[in-house]
Image 1 (cartoon, rainbow, N blue to C red):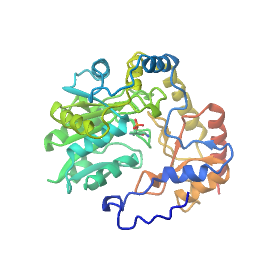
Image 2: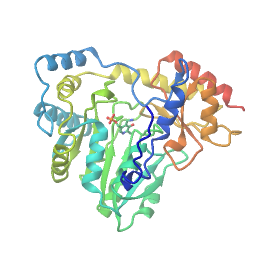
Image 3: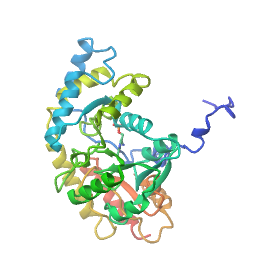
Length: 376
Ligand code: PMP
């Protein structure tokens, strides 16, 4: 459709610096390809397990089609609490069912950040953090995790000022696949306690951890807003269910804001998530660990890649001979391979993101193409 109606002067100033992410632009270019090898996608490649589908259908049939209470149905909040106790060994003061992990992040930022506050974000970062902090009028302060994507507490300490409000932590990471060690997490918890900072911990990939056990900072630091969800773990990104857990005074504010914005997470999906809590995803985890190994071995020695310990992304360096990440990704597109330029997730333009949430055949063909492209 033509866009002839001028909205000049009508759009809010806050949108001036928010443009559609690099990922979308690549999707648009990729949409023109015929049957591309798509290693750009940020969602699991498997479908929702059958028992969860049945539970959703049954919920619709039983008339669970109305609003639920804002905080989410009681049994699901109870199940989320038990999940957190089992995984992390503590019981949160409060929980809230949200419209995806994005919903929890938006409510969390809106309830914590004042204009002019400093927000500490990792670089590389999941793009939404930058947008949310910008919407809140925050000053973005990045802690750099290059080249091996570790947490450097001394570097973070040097960035903290009187204006620092919160630090965003994302382990396992999108886009790097890094999972922080228990020692890294404990050091950061001590730093945050010393400066009385809030941690927003996005743990959406907590089911996709392949080597050492996963440690949540919420285990060590009570002023943590723990955020996770069902979207990635059960192949249901379109069903929009996430959750937040943490201090009741914060969760109460988020609940109030949810009441006047999202209202509630989708009802039938909440009911289906009750079943999801009992579904074991170990098979998928094993499968993704193998895919991780395929990628790490397949790109060695042509690429510099820190082996991802979690999530389903790797973040290799663009090979020598290409001026930047976008040029490299465009070369890959010309070979029918879709990947994402690192600058969609970073101030640097030296890397690219590859998702291994794909079937093995496609993954192998993608690795072949990347090996061909490694020597321009
Ligand atoms: N956090 C991270 C790190 C993600 O990768 C994503 C999805 N790409 C989200 C949050 C948003 O997840 P949801 O679909 O549950 O809103």
